Length: 237
Image 1 (tube, rainbow, N blue to C red):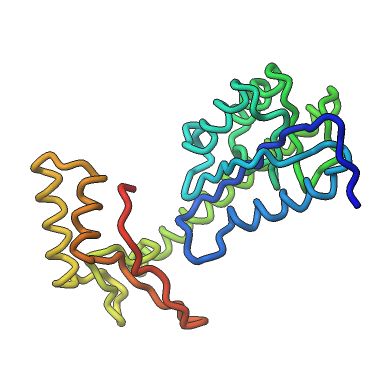
Image 2 (spheres, rainbow, N blue to C red):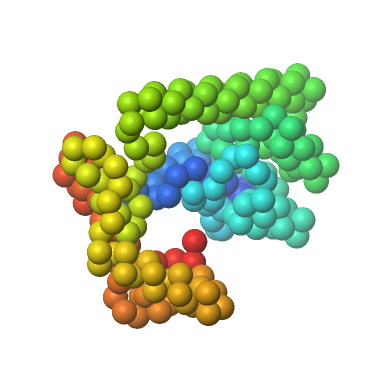
């Protein structure tokens, strides 16, 4: 039986993933579960999840202007979070300047950060130094990934191949050249969306219209597993 702590430390779990969710179980869900289990193991020390979710899905690490992070910071200012828990430090930021600024803000508020994969780090000067080193590595990794993508794009251009990821709505990929070709039914819908936007309708209003018409987002089948993704409701994003 768990001993009930005399003083709770309310912990906010922050998660982030750069890409749009591609399935039922997202990276944010995996991060949250790992952090939640980490907190359960420390319940006897008074560490308790505050019951709120701070999940930034499809949010880049290159900016601190993120919806869930803003909610987390607002809750910290309101005294609803005593400790921030993240799975890895790069979930906060891959930019050394942003990460340092964010850590300093949390430190000024008296809110420590716990990294699940490095739980031994605390708030001493040495720990702060190590956190800054980890942030530097995260930024270095981001720049290396960016360079690899740039090299790949350049190689594809030299071969006359399409430089892109998933096929956007309104198009299909030619099976031979991989170049984009217009998909007539989807293209008609795209034109309607742009027409509504030109009339002054907001993204939220447009999403409501297309969902009422039962238009669905693009479906994609995995070449490896055959799993079909997409086909969901439209959102303002």
